Image (cartoon, rainbow, N blue to C red; front, side, top):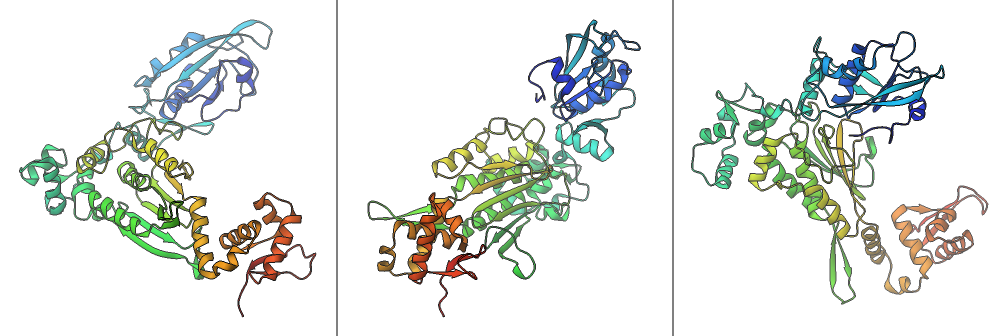
Length: 482
């Protein structure tokens, strides 16, 4: 359970800012009024609700005028929540603002992993958002039920569908994987994909010939850019743009082949005199990221699709929907939880998904084995999950060396000093450089960088740009032939 404070220190409770994980209330409020906050914390990530402290931080406890009995607050969850969440009440001895011995009550509320918690009196559902406990509307409650796996979008029936929508090739492959000769209808019924002549949402996504007929957002878009950021308008820098929107087994396979075709390999001459190849990223890392996105995205979330954005220096895979239920950015390496267990199980049978929770940890391991930076998982907008893989600085240097070697003869390069060669590589990567920037890059002073730049200008390798030697905006770029 994620809580805001490491201990039950009354002094901290008086000064702590109310947040996603912490709130305080006076003991003068009605115990039933704490129920919304208990429900809200349980439906979110848990937290602490402290009773007996005013909003402004003074400790009034339970012996002041108008305070309710502490036992009523201890029983609030049991009396007022449905189902009853896990709440641990802790009484903390204090000296109240009148100088008397008193208590405050800390309600330690655990997150509910399998049920949406509602207020018993009116079935209202609340969720903790920042420092408030907000009531949810019907659609928001439905989304929360999906998130808690109390209700599964994948198991609901798509009434517009029928067995006639099934992709026969994918179905034949599935039967081969299962080792059965039963009819398509028998298999779909027995595996829970067909009810009363209609496919479930999981059945649509996995086996229908055209899932986007029913869910237009069920697709994967792969974009390759020229550069390290997306440009627009006249500077649009999209090199390749493909969308994959068939049944999930085909989508995974086709997207894998396309992404693989867009990845680069860097060659270098090893110490043994043989050329070696460095792949841009380890295949397992990016493919596992793709499979995870397809398997675990929030398919109930309409209007958005999975994106694979390939830049010169990184690859980003963005999947709609926040991390499910008990999974967090901190525990995702070792916590197993599937938003779509039926889809996950079926993709295991197709051979695309691993049954054990080894995937995320292995992404980290594979990147480390290739001497690449750790992968980064993030929730960039609070409603999606993004995996970022960076290619290596070594690989970028090797690519620059290939470009340099094609532009300059070997004798010219051999006559460059160590600082001059490093400067040339840096300018190839950045396009231009100032003396101050180069000094920082080399880890030396401007007294080293400036003569190095001037030497390369003299050798007609770089061009100087500026109005005077003291121009603060002066810089150097690669020499342009007349």
